[in-house]
Length: 385
Image 1 (tube, rainbow, N blue to C red):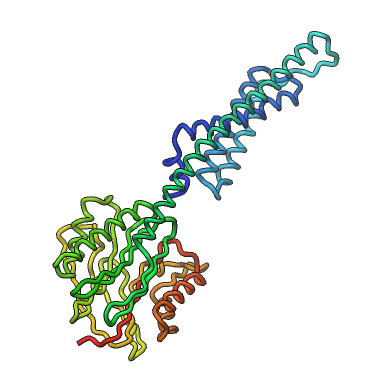
Image 2 (cartoon, rainbow, N blue to C red):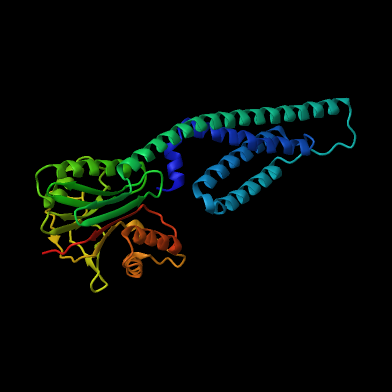
């Protein structure tokens, strides 16, 4: 969502109206100042129309500048041209009164009264504008600190739900990290162990911010509940899909990938997720492991396929989200799977934690990350049958 659209949706309507009233009155002071410069020779109707016109255009400048932001000039110059044309037309239709060669007592009294009125109007307009801006500052300040506190709490919850991973399970090492693009992310990494084996999985909820973070928390809860049951791992995706369908927004979906060891085989599946990368220590080659499943939360009644993958000692698997792959440089080139593979090959033999940091460093050098970045490494120390 664009920042300007977010502003109009999130800022209370009353606050927006009061801020624009403040802009109108501050801008209108130019109309009164113009009348003072002309020594009160403008017709009263023209002075009133000048004030309304300049104040109205001040509001238009504020609104279009907020909407267009860095492209403010696209509206500013056309609006400014229209304002100048309208003011010149007013000056033509309602011309200034002739300058008197001599001023009697009555003319001096009229001028003094007119300039006093202009001065009082300027003081009044500045006061109203000041009060409006103070009100908006206090109101939005309170709201900001309240939202900031809520976001800080959400960030703490996110850290609890998605901590860094550095653990072992029998003959496997796990190392993972999830870096949100904002205060709260929609990525999830997790390793679950039971008496039958373990499962390492990664998920990516579409979108950014708090809403995907909430869905991410639901995915983890549902996954842990399913994995705590006696059902097989290959039923996990069907279960998560059935849980997500009735509780998410229509445009929300979740990509998912996992590796699972049942004591005999290393099983895997991907659902709309980037392929799992498999580094073969013996040949120093990297292969891609994936299934042709749709993301979770899109359609019901669809079966999810899985498979198994052989491995050898010191083989390394990487589950990664597209926030790492889609980092772009100044030439709009993505880091991609090729960039990740290059780092894995260059740092082969290093501990998984060192390779993880090398991948993140490489993406930072490549360009700016616009999405959550999550990586989960699984290193094997035995051979599959």
